[in-house]
Length: 296
Length: 260
Image (cartoon, rainbow over all chains, first blue to last red; front, side, top):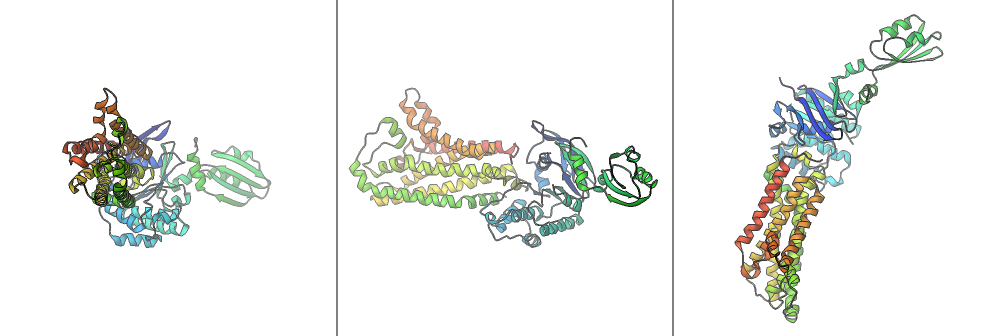
C-alpha cells in the first residue's frame, strides 16, 4: 500500500533561506504524524505544497497516491484541511458557511455537520463576526472533518480551543484513525502531540531533522536523574562516564544529566550506598528543544 | 461548484449593490425632476472643448442633453466603476488577503472554474446596476415631462453596463494576478481615471486624438447612445475588453502561489 504522503526532494525556495528544502517524508496510512518545528521552519509551507496552494520549486510529492501537481483536484476530494491562520466570511453564520464549504466539496451529509457541531459545541446560528477565536476554530475544524476524508492535514488545530473541546477533538481524531484516516498535524502544543501522535517529524530551517516514534526520541533524549547516597560521592567518578553531560554534587545528592543507556550510571552508583533515585525520563520539551536548536 | 461560488459572491455583494442601485435611481430621478426648473433657464452653455469632452456638451435645453451632462458623463460612470472595481478587487485578492481563499482552494475546486464563477458573481450585480440605471433614467424622463424613449434609455444603460464590466475586469485581472487588494483597487481606479481623462482631453491635443480609442469611455459614450441608441461595435469593444482581461485574470490566477 502506498504512503498517505510521500515526498521526494520536495522544495520550495522563497529566497533568503526561507522555505522547505529537499524534504523526503513518508506518512504511513492510518497513522497520526505530529509535524513539529519552530516558527518559520516550513511546516505550513509543506502543507500548502501538498494541497497545491503553492507550487514546488523542485522535487515531487504524492498524496494518497496522487501527484500533487498533476492530480491536485482528485487528491483534494479525499483530503480535509485546516489552515493555521485562517479567516472566514464574517457576515455568514456557521450553518451558511459550512453549507458553502460542503457544496464546494461536492456534498456532505447535513447530519454529519450537525454531529460534529454537537461534539465540538459549535454555535452554527451566530454570524462569524460575533464568534470568539475558539468558536471560529471549531468551524474551521468542522469544515475539515465533515467530508470524512482519508487524510486530514491540520495546521495548529487546537489553537484557541478550551481544554474540554481539545479533548473532544482529540477523541474525534482517535475515532477517525480507527476508521483508517491518516492525520498529518502540526502543533506547538507538545502535550497534544504526546497525546495523539504515533510518530513525529521535526523540521528546522526548512529541513527535516528527524522522523521517529516518540518513545524512540525519548529513549535517546537527555535524562535527568537525582541520586541520594548515604554519604557524599566523588563527582569525577560520574563525570567521565560515556554520555554524561552534567554532574552536580550537593552533599550526599548527585544530579546527573546523561543521554543513551543508563547502564554506566547505575553501575557507578551501585558502588556506593544508594538511598533513593529520582528519574525524569525523556522530558518532552527537552526532546523537542534538542532538535529545535541549531546544534542538536 | 460554480453555482455555489457564484452564489456566495452574490450573497457577499448584495448589500453594496442594492444600496448603490437605490442611490443611482434616486439621484438620477432627482436630476430629472430638476430639469424643468433649471434646464430651460440655463439653456445651452458653451463649455470649453476640454470640459465638454469630460462632462458632456452642456446642452441643457433638452432632457437628453441635461441627463447626458449630469448623469451619463460623470455620476453614472462613477457609481458603476466604483462598485465594479471594489467588487472585483474583493473577490479573489480580498479573500486571499483575508486568508479565506486557502480554505476554499483546499476543497476540490478548480482555480479556473472558481475564477469564472467569481467573475460571473461580479458581472451579474453590475448588470443589475445597469437595470437600476435604466430605471433611474426612465423615472427622470417621466419627472421631466418626457422626451427620450425607453429604448434610448435602455441603450444608455447597456453602454453603462459595458463600461462597468470593462473597468471591473481591470481590477479582476490585477487582483487575480497579484493577490493584492490594494493593487487591484488602486490600479483599477487609476486606469479608470486615466481612461476618463484621455477620452475627454486627447481630442483637444493635436496629434493625440487617436488616444481616445484606447479609452473604454470612448466606447461608452462616444456614440451618444442616449440620442442615437445602441452602437453594437462600441458595446462589443467594451465586452471584448472585459473578456480579454478576464482571460488574463484566469491565466494570472491559475499558475501562481497563494500569498496567504
